[in-house]
Length: 377
Image (tube, rainbow, N blue to C red; front, side):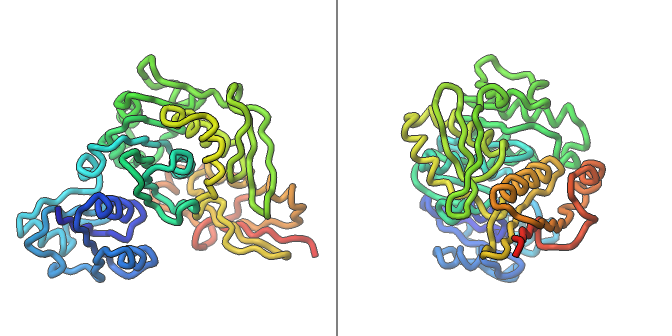
């Protein structure tokens, strides 16, 4: 099949394009401008057109897939429809891309990228993630037909991801503009996603998951009693969390925070359906974090810069707690936080929550969350 992706430079769509290419299809795409992602795609043998134009669409295409950011006025989408080429949104394309795979699908307002990346490292499986895993340096990896997939609830596309195993970190309301602020509709989508899967693993202490009508075979993790003896250590200036899970013994994973132990525990429980406990204990050490999640972008003896994509009050609080834990171990004397609001609707919907975040200054334009930790000299 010959497939063209409109908006191929996006973190989500680029992973799907890579997956189809490795699945044996001929893939091309376009975006508004060249980026590190589009450059990497071209180096991998995917033709990328910039900018987008109607002449990029050829009659021999079998399918055109477009990102959620593409509007009906897009010249390539218009041309595809005029040529009567089949066009599908990213959401609509998932059954074609994921339909015949063994999918471990991770959803949740917070922690789904991290949990998916940890799971991919544990299983040494194929992966489609909305972030760059440092384990394999990409948002995508093709190994086999077992896939660690970051499932997106923002447009209910997770309902089309064909989950063999559904994993939910939390079900805090987010992206409510898509659901027309209908909370019954929002929670019904989570219920359907979880119940679709043969294997179901959820955070049993999440206040929103508790309200869902789930099948009796769901596996529930209760972090306050199932995860014990959490300790934080630094190895080669990198953060690590060590914890004990149920009666499985101790595990160590890259990152700081109770939320990291939670994400890792959900991944471990899901992975037990595929591999042994001892394999999990070894493989989890391959996880090295993901970019823009407590990401050390600069470090020397005098200061370090940590980039984090925390864009919701709940995530901000977790990240700031991680900064505190790291700075206490490193005896850091000064911490500076720079925050950029992300997405107008999210900022308005969560404004009071943002105001309540500890140590959060007034909005300052920056690339993302940036923490600058300065040592006393």
